[in-house]
Structure formats: structure tokens, C-alpha cells
Image (cartoon, rainbow, N blue to C red; front, side, top):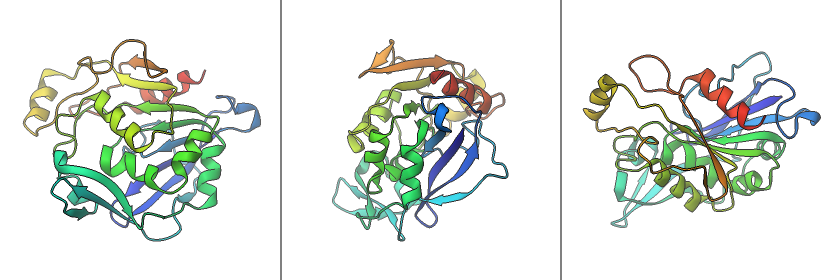
Length: 251
């Protein structure tokens, strides 16, 4: 199985990724040499995929593109750094130019994938930008792949203050209504008291453990819970735990 992991590079506006090998024989397309596609993940190695000699860089656009946001007062800000500070003032996220197109191989990778995951990553500056590229949402919707939304662990100060895990998902759905997720992966393990104190001092709070996403399913997507936290003081997904969880979704 091969995989494509993509993200939005706020420095030069590229939507790009790398191709990796994953275990063979997993997923609905495994019999035809299937692939894994992760869209918008900003956490290096979050899916447990290791780059090897098969790695290659892909670009999801044909021309230079900038990330921009319209604010509630009608003004516009540009770039990942500025957009990451506007929080609730953000009205609409868009790309300039709006009609940027992906390279054919990017869509081919999506259409041929076994598993497509969205997340974890910064909502407005990592997860959503690839979905704004012409044809990407439609390709994900058309793909036979199992589509998985991986919930973030924490809010991001200045960008997603006060947003619940469910609200993250709702905003993704606003920008990409064509995509119907099959699984929602949510961490169920509370962070430590020390981590809680540390992150509260920075204005961040844990999400996914307070009931905004609960039960067995949301809009037809089955919710998969698990202890996905890495060891250490920083709140991070454990790469192996998350990779195992994602692959078990397709088992």
C-alpha cells in the first residue's frame, strides 16, 4: 500500500505532500495495490507513516496561490500567520486566485486511495486550504476510499478559541459538503493536570472529551474512540496509536 500525506505550506502557499509506503493488503483497494491519502495533516508523522526510498513530493496546484480570509468587518487578511490570529472574526476562508487547479497526479492519488484522512492539524491554516483547491473536494467525494476525520486534541489559541470537536467537524462540512466521512476518530483520554494547567495558561483547551462528539455515529459516520495521546508534557497524537487506529478502521 502506498500513501500520500499533504498539507498547506503557509510560507509560499503550496498545497503539497509526500508519498510513502504503508503495509500491503489493507483497505478496500488493497487487491489493486491500494494507497493511503492524508489531507491537511500538519503534525509530522501523526499517521505513523515513515518516509523511505519511495518518497516523492507532490504539488496540489498549477500556479502560485495565497491563503486569504475575509473578516466580519469586511477587511481581508493574507497568509497563515495572520489568519491564525483572527479567531472568531473570520467570516470566510478562500484562495487567491480562487480557480487554482491541482496537478493531475494529486487527484489520481486521491481517487486511487484506500483510506483518506483529514486531520489532525490547524483547522483554518492546514485542514481547510487543500479542500479549497479546485477539484480536490470532488475527488475525495468520488473516491472509493474509506474517509476518516481525525479530531484535534486541543484548541489553537487565536485560531480556534472556544470551538468544540464537533464544531471543527461542522466547519469542515460547511466548506466541503460533498465529503461524507465514514469514521470520526476521537481521543478519549483526558490530558494530565500538569498539561491542563500548562495549556490553559496559553489559552488552549482539550477537545473531544467533553461530549460535543458522543454516541456511536454522527451523520452516518461511525465514531471511533481511543487513547491516542503520546507520552510527554506536550499534548500530541502518538504516531503508532493513531496509525493503528486508522488502519483498524479499514480492517
